[in-house]
Each structure stands twice: as C-alpha cells, then as structure tokens.
Image (tube, rainbow, N blue to C red; front, side, top):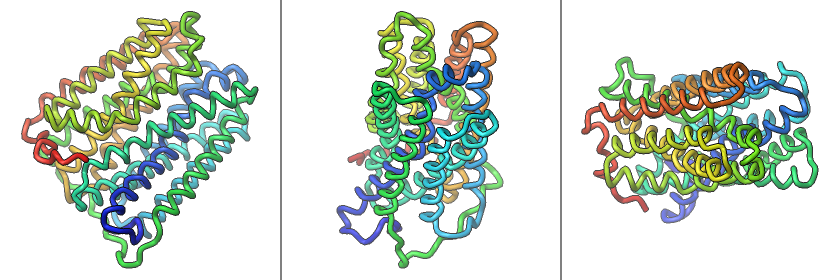
Length: 401
C-alpha cells in the first residue's frame, strides 16, 4: 500500500517508517506525555491536589480509550491518511490550548479530546506502517516507527527544560509544545501525500470471537497500561518531592525519552532471540522493578534508574503486544489494535485517579506505585501462560534490519 508517495522502492519503506515515527513523536511522545514534566510547576501555580492532577491525567486516558474504540468503527469514512493528519492537528490544538485556560473543566475537556486524538494517531499510524513494512519485507523498520514516542518525549523534555531555565511559566510550556506538534504534523503531511492509485479500503469488522490467546494478551496489555502509568504520570512530581533527588528534576524525564528511543529495537531483537512470550514477560518484570525503585529508593540514583527502566521498557512492551496481536488476527488489524489500545487505555484511566487519591490520603506514591508494580508482575504471569505457539512469530521473521 503506497500511502507514502511515489518514491523509489528502496527509499519508500524508510519514508513510511519515518512518517510513522514523527506522527508518534508528535501525538504520543509530546502531546500525551508532556503533562508529566509540566505537572509540578502547573500544580504549584494552580494549587492542584494530587487527586486533581490525577483526574486531569485520567481525562486524557479516557479520551485515549474512546479514541481507540472510534478508530475501530467499521467503514470509517474517508482515507486513513486524512484521519491521521486530522488527529495530529487536533492533538496540536488541544496541547497548545492547555496554556490558554485556567479552569478545571477546561483542562479536563482539552486533555480528553487530546487523548482521543493521540489514540487515533497510534492506532492508524501503527496499522498503516506495520502493514506496509511487513508487506514490503522490512518488518525491522517498525522499530524506527515506535522510536517516535521516545523521540517525542525527549524533544518535549528538552523544550520544557530550556524554557523553565529561561523563566517560562506553565502556560508558555504548553503553548511551545503545541507549536512543536504543529510543525511535526506539517512534516508528516509532507511525508504522506495523497496517492490516488489506491482507493480507501473497507475496514474489517471486529471479530465475533477472539482468536485463541488474544483474550489473555488483551488482559495483560491492560494490566501493563495500569502498571506503567503511575510512574509515567507522577515521576517528575515524585522526584520534586524528594530532597535527595530534586536536583535532577530537569534530567529525569529526558532519561525516559532517551532510553525509550532504542527500546523497541532492543526488545524486538530480544523477542527474536528468546520468543515474544518470554520477551514480553521479561520486560514487564524489568518495568516492575523500575516502578518500585521510583518510590523505594528516593535518591538521584534511584530516580535515574527508575526513569531508565521505565523508558527502556514501555514502548518495547507496546510494540511486542501490538505485533503479536497482528499475528493472532492478521485479517482484522485495525479493530484488534483498537481492542488492545482500549484495554491499555482502561488501565491508564484507573491508574492516575487511584494514585492521586491514595497519595492525598497517605502522603506519597509508595502504595500506588507498588500496586502498579504488582500489576506488571501479573501481566508477566498471564503472558507466560499463553500457548507458546501463539508467541513465536518473530522467531520465524528474524530479518529485523
């Protein structure tokens, strides 16, 4: 499917992967995750409680859940490229508008809509890119696509850090990141021109019966969503609250982004070596350690280790889960991706609200973080219980470059 223009056959897969990378960097890495480094200064300026901060985060994740379900609607009108670019524009507008409002209902609405846009981008971009790369015989380039999330986190962390050091307030941070996303959306549009040679496909309906093993994978994916999100939402706030780690606050989210960029390639190769079932399980356990370390070792070293383990696993787990879902249901890629993303989104909705509530009651994030770590361990156990033959695709597809 030549959705990415008429380039040479050798350059075209690379252009597809780069287009997907920039799309994920803009809508997921920047728009969705920039709330984490902005949250501490925003909360201080507006006197937000941790429960309120968690509600704002969960509004984004509720939008993410509903956006994933909408992306699964059979026969979605118009070309996928148009929906993808439209979602990127919405992501940019809702991000920048966060710096132009002050009331809680406005924050909730903007983050809700922005979450829906980010899910739409993830589902559509991943379906288009993975489908195209596999058909072109270049599945290894999927790591370039998924590296976009880490790239977006890194870029937005740098923007926030530089502007904070220059004296910017929380409003200017949101607006600046919104501008970055607008620029990225324009670049994605350039990389994804219309191609009239290929009309829009009819979208397959969701399967009436889940393929064997997919239900367990979806459950584990939802636990993964709950397990990572407490640290992903509150890590910078946790660091700011620790006298021993406060000095590295500008660095900690940057570490998450930098370690996320190569993580998909690393876990892809690990999956090819030991099998997807074992790679997913191992990554869940590694991430669980990072989540626990964030609160049990409240020092600069502990915070950096937690950031590295979180960044080094969460996108790898995303890629492993989506790739395996495609293998289990190859004829229903979009709706199955949406089911996976919806389960992931549900876990994310519960996580910040519960963490904020428990933190306000107990004065810290120890209990919610340990609950999150336990969810990741449970996800690891569930995936290990799946049939081995359902988790061996990458063993048969070792061409990863």
